Image (cartoon, rainbow, N blue to C red):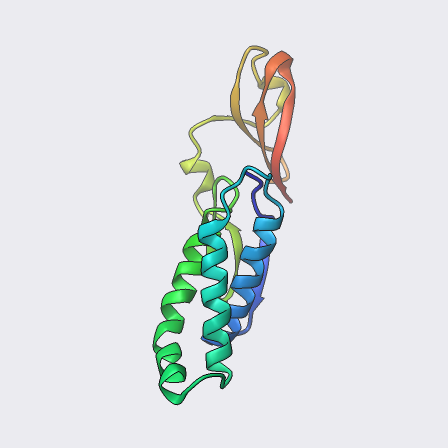
Length: 162
């Protein structure tokens, strides 16, 4: 699975119409980045539901269908948030920014260092040569990088934040 990049995808609004559009679009983008073997069907169904709800909120359909869409919109937004959470990088989440609840995106967990159960180092030379698994490197400037230590001491970067 390819994880999402850190950052905002929707800001300045908490209106269901805006969130439906932004979240469905982001989910579609995340699906486009996945390998061919990735199971897309449940996510595609949710995107279709979100787009149908959005059309109804924008006046398409009968009055009863439009009212139903108003009641159903927040449920679809929550389902989209749950789905997007599955694409969050390790030690991250999808949701509102801790400093601004109307800024939705992929953010690093506040206590990511405490929650991390792999090897934490402040110098990459401190990684044992035979170590295999996740390595969290935080340098003296506070920059954080998550790696996976592979065979022969090779590191594969998962994410990096400055």
